[in-house]
Structure formats: C-alpha cells, structure tokens
Image 1 (cartoon, one colour):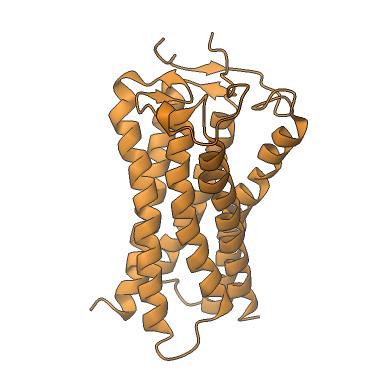
Image 2 (cartoon, helix red, strand yellow):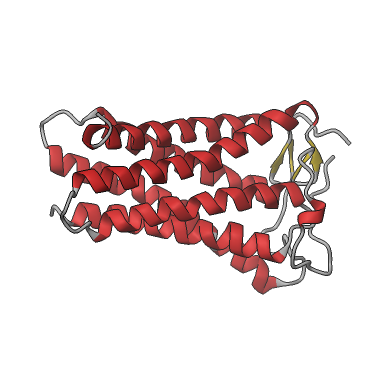
Length: 130
Length: 122
C-alpha cells in the first residue's frame, strides 16, 4: 500500500535540488519515466504554441482595430497557464519536497490566475454579442 | 519502490498536504475551484457564444477544435486533483494523465493554429 507522501516539516523556498524525473508525486515511475516527461513537456509547449497562434489570430482578425477585453483575457490566460504547466512539472517531480516558490508562484497561482482569465475572457466573448 | 498499478487512498484534504496547517490545506483545496472552474467556464461560454454567433449556420472547424481544447483542458485540470491528493495512485493514473495531456495539447495547438491560419497564415 502506498502511503501518501507529505512535504517535509520545514518548507523549503526552492525545491529544485529534489527534482527527480524518475519519480512522480514521490513514486518511482519506472518505464513511464520518459513518456511522462515528454507528455508534461508537450503540455507546457502546447500552451506556449497556443498563446503564439492566438496572438497571431487576434492580430489578424482585429487588424488595426482595438483588441477586445475578451480576447486579451483569453490570451493572457493561455500564456499564464503555460507558466503553470512548467511549475506543474517541478511540483510533481520535486514531491514530497516541493519548493514554496515553485508551488506558489509557478504552479498554484499561475494556474488559478490563468483559469480565471480564460473563464472570464470567454464570458466577455459571449457577452459582447448578447 | 516501483509505482503500483492502481491504488486508492482515503486522504483528507483538510489535513493534507500540510498536516496540521489547516489554513494552507484550505488554500490548496480552494484554489482548485478557479483552476478547474476557469476552464469549465470557458468550455461552457464558448458553446453559448458559438450557438449565439453562428445560430443555424455550421460552426467552423477551428472553433469546434478550440472548444474541444477547453473541454480537454478542464479534464486535464480535474485529474490533477486526485493526483495531488493521492486519492488514486499508480501506473494507470499516470497513463491516463499522459493521454489526457497529449489530447488537450493537440486540440489547443490545432484549434489556435486553425484560428490563426484563417487570418494570417495563408
């Protein structure tokens, strides 16, 4: 039976020295080490690429016109979520000793802010035509 | 110890991951509402937007794909909750997580690429 691992009693500011791509949430990945790393890298890259193409889309669609609040929020949301996906890798791979910096400023907060911005952006997108 | 195939744990989110630090545990738990809710809200409002904007007309592929990106993004954020709380642990979970991440990433790249392609990349 796996005992869920909890962070060390003395929280660390940076936990990068504990980063181990062979472990996921403190458990040995075995043969899943490389597939998991590639999938996590791909997820982070997809948000960067997505943000890039959405910028190109808004530049083209609104050429010369002011970009509405909705699309600005969606763009920022996708871009900030890219940071969260990088932080996610650090958090999962450093567990059970994730750094306070990585967990808060690269994972939890960017995830929450990114989610709120994307959600609000699509809400305004809908409200703009109603 | 190698990761098990699949195991379930009863972990109380009020006592995990920071043990007796209830405030921190609550913070980690509550912050998942905007994380999952934001993507869920996006999937919901994009559907409403498309139904309103296109009406009876067919919805273009780029918008359908972008909407799917938000749906899979929501699933991606959702599965991270049991992973973080280690309610479900094992190789099966990692495999499902890998598949979801790849699908969500493909839809996001394709959806945004198709949107951009229509106006820029000709």
